[in-house]
Image (cartoon, rainbow, N blue to C red; front, side):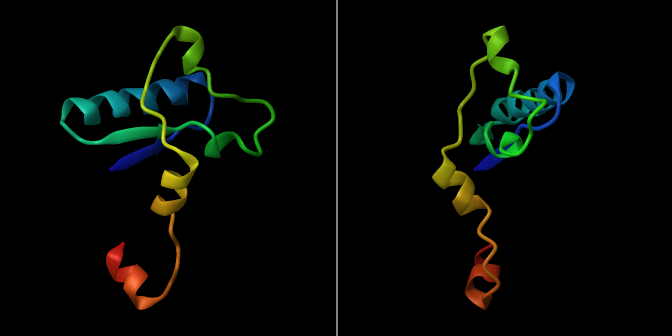
Length: 79
């Protein structure tokens, strides 16, 4: 699975959404993380929703599992 993290302003989000659409067209399992990139951001918010754009959202647990940064040998091999 591929998880794309939305971040930045509307232009960046549109490019990230275009990548999402291309990966979907290529038959990949892909979701968008629209909360991690904005946890500490106060001036920007996810803006794709106001255009009626729908996408598969990654759950917080999926993002945590994808970002597993354990450094033991088995976790490193698994990644």
